[in-house]
Image 1: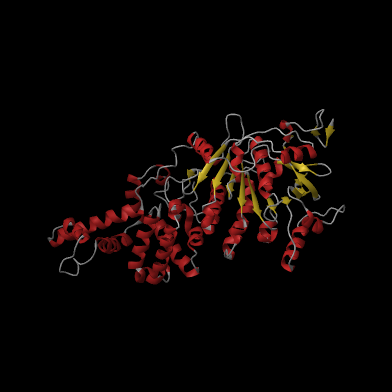
Image 2: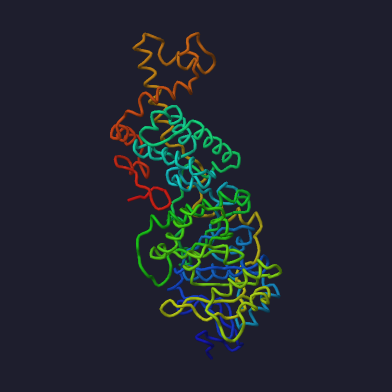
Length: 530
């Protein structure tokens, strides 16, 4: 017997293997099975609804379906619930009953999971270099105004022109200190630069450090190819970012996910329309991405979302209400799952009306009214079909996840981390030779030459400044001040070629490949690798 193309067995239930059939993921059941066509899954999607209405379960159902299809998944785990994907479902009565109601055979299953964590506590550490972040995203992270962002752009411009790698915060600090001491000279070349503005940026860097945000900036930087893996059975790896602690710094959370999306956009080749995506990216609490975002950033995100589908990447936003997403971005999200919304105030009623208008209407029921009447685990579903047109919205019972609903125990998480293929690759920081070291070396060399020319005591006298001062004005300077002064006498006048040559001799690998040419920055300001 067949039901809408989904094979039913003698007991009237769908088998475990039929949760994914004919290139479609089974989402739930209305008057017919509701599915997501993998060929159109890179046209992005949206899961919305009030707190407690089942958004996380819908996300988990989709993640399980993508994994079964061999599509890797990346998802931020705000509450820890998604860790349950690593354990088989426990067959709780409500889940079994839901399966029976929609004609699905409940068969507990578990999925290959890799845990990640910016702080390295609940997963493998995730890092990005300052250069990869770029001035636009770093300004967003530091909450800089337009003037401060302009000075940060000057800093990156100088670093790019001089071939200096900005890997971590001490590199950026060294460069900002150089700019502060040369503010007057640099103003004539790059525009207005004030010491006060540089000082404000330095203070914001201190705030970032106090929030442990600096732990994200450094090496080894995440290789996005490690997010696009399958296991030995061909199932897509589900990459879960521990975000419960990260959410204490919403700006860092949103900036990190923006950076990751930009990396995918800039590094992956154009592939056109595939039979299924190469990666699906779930962005929970998506309203944080656009909260107080400048117009330029919002426009850039809209452009990335519009174009990244040709790279084989599907982006799915999860938030409470569609109005949290700018209209230009919302228009790109073709696959929709709308859980219940409450409408007690005029503003909430307007939000419900807007949400209803985003669907292709079904004459069988009032969409706006249905949104307020949906029960837990029930949603309005519309997905792309045929040549990419949205299906008529249907009131749908969402399928139960086959993995565990809710978080796994800490001991089980640690066991999975210990056996992960990523174990050891990102856990220990690397301090490569970069801008800080190069500037310090040049300052030391310049100071030594200056002391020798004056017949002085050389670098030993300079190091004496660590613990005391001499009677002369020159000797009263600290080592840090002398480093800055000597750098300003030498580095600004060096040619790009000379500096690039020196760095190129000492740095290899991923960073060395950028030496000897101008650094090219991508859509969101990160390095555009070639």
